[in-house]
Image 1 (cartoon, one colour):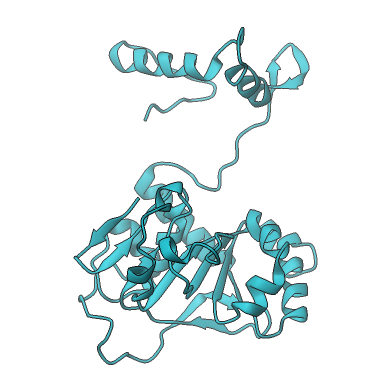
Image 2 (image 1 turned 90 degrees about the horizontal axis):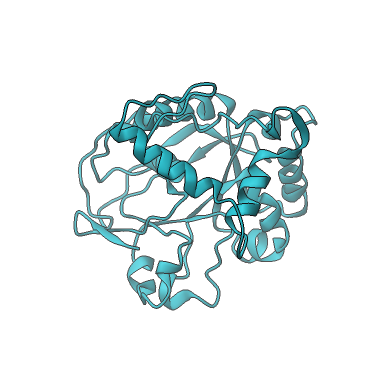
Length: 268
């Protein structure tokens, strides 16, 4: 899916772009962003064509290089954000995308073999902590062949801590030992906390709040509630469509005086 931003920037949005947009916000200097993009302290800026003389690179202290422990230095004018959605198939906008000064991709989305639709350049690749193992399945491609790319890895502090117990950070440390030219950065704990607060303020949802794992029945330990829901919802026949049922309840609640508690269920 694609839309044109100010007739210049190609913004191709997918399901997991919210955090990516939070990261991009302060690295661009050409568009006005709403409050959700104030995570990096800049809510608006003057539109500038990317071919004008570049300003000195800005320093972003919320992102630290795994090898050198230095903050990220980057500045972008015209940005293309490429989603991983199947909507990109047959779009044939690769050449247009590659004209942007900064091209952002997510997780392990490839370009090789898909250049006609999604372009071939990657300036910054924003990667969830859960997708790091996917990059490590093909490290020669991600960290050697495309070593001009800046990797920004984000995740909860428990996985990113540097005291030896951060599982993801340990993976990244080994990676830069093997590929010293790789430009791998991680978000600081302070930056993650701040972005989480901005996200919660704008959406009403806590990105970092996990769900409570509970049994299917309170009186019958063993079966997991979520597993049971998905098992029945996807059954070819004879299943109890729990998820569909709850959508019906939600619709009724909007038209009748129904309040859900324990846990509280906020209707969207």
